[in-house]
Length: 476
Image (cartoon, rainbow, N blue to C red):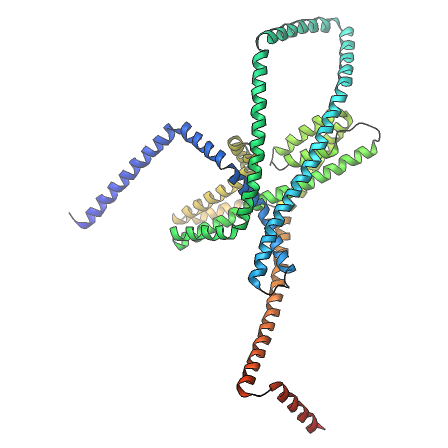
């Protein structure tokens, strides 16, 4: 058998073996899907503190980087570079964690007291509202005998249903509620414990972020060739740009919307003194929190805020519905594009698709990260498609598509601020480097002069003084 035939049949054998092995693995994966999904859920539950810590570290990291640059400037009086960098690094990490804890604490002390006072207010108002509702219903029923007959039939059926429910199913429901309450309390403590451990993990992530990034880069370049590794690193940078820009921009946008909503509700309360109102802070915080979720978040916050306001003051509810609708139009057409820009690069259809898909898979967190995650996947698929077109000699199709459907390139407000800050920082670094270079040059000249003096036994400063005096004498 020739060597070429041997290589040919060996390649065919390896390909068949690989196809059979992959088929077996795929069959096992599908057949054992419940067990695999259960194992993944158990693993995610065990690693939940690390997941929370990683998310916190990723959100805090931009603030920590800015604090580090600030501390480097403030600690410029420390001459040793390594010592100054270490102190600035540690102070920036702990400063970022402390600022985050303060922000969370402020949100809690704003929401919890207002939530309690709102519940107390609802409990106080409900009896009077119930009496008014009963009086209105009696008036309507007394004026219409047909409605009275139908209402009596409904009341009889409702009474029979309640009696059967109390006799047959009430005990089971009470037991289920008791078990649910106990499970809920345990879940709350587990969440608090995971968040506490998550803050500790976030500190370790932030302290080791540069080393971890370097290690990840070493692993990529050790496995793949240079061109492939460069492509992977470019995609990682693109994913980081998409995620950080979208999440940080969404948080900033939601804070601005909540502040504007609070100001509008305060103006309405000031214009209607003496009337009972739902807490403006509570409604604004709810609107801001749900505004983080793309597409659906506004509707959820709008509905909850209107429902809370309706229970206390229908006029406030009507004002909130109109005002929040106008606010969301302003946010969607002015504030959002200015703050977020076109960070994702995907259409509204794919935004809706990503929210529904990842929201069903991962709940609230899926709604939050689904859009940037799908944007990264969309970008990868687009690059592969255009690479395939180029390989098949169909570059004109790609160029025609780009010409017919150009991507809207618009820098966001946060990107503009970031670029301006980076330019200022670079200019300051160049200025510092030039000053340090002049100091080093002067120091080297002084050391060289002292070395020559030590070698020749001549004081060059005195010689220069004598030469200057002789030149002055000659001129006279």
